[in-house]
Length: 179
Image: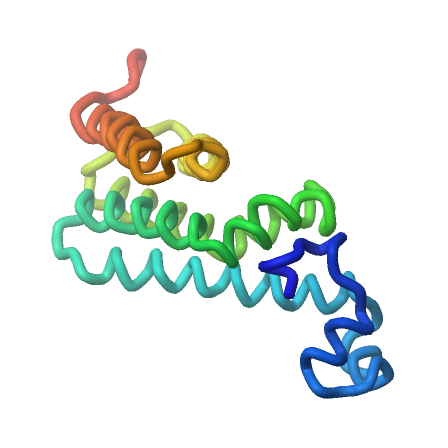
């Protein structure tokens, strides 16, 4: 229901009826509608993260794995349910800091682990893996928001992905100046 109507557009009574339970049963498991939303957002974020892992695991070359994971993130987060829950409702419903932490705990940690692996294999030179993770994660989240708001999402996704690939290629080919 959150997917179709958004957090603000659905009441706990409607959720209980749709689930075939009483409102009291919902309150028994979740303290509030927000508590239910937290669980839904966490589950959705974990599903997106699993898509990242699955895509990365399908690639043997380290840089290809990073690229595949990043592309899988974009595709998974742009699915209707994930887009509404994670991109539109979660930042305001959960609060900015909680939303960022949830993103970091789910998909973000996989990106950081992949970048650390590239560094340990001497395939990436960076002065700060956490900073680079934040930059790339931010770029992916902004790209997802941009694509989601575009009139033609397929064209926008191709454009965003093309530019993101250029960013990755730049990291793969050059070392930062001064190092």
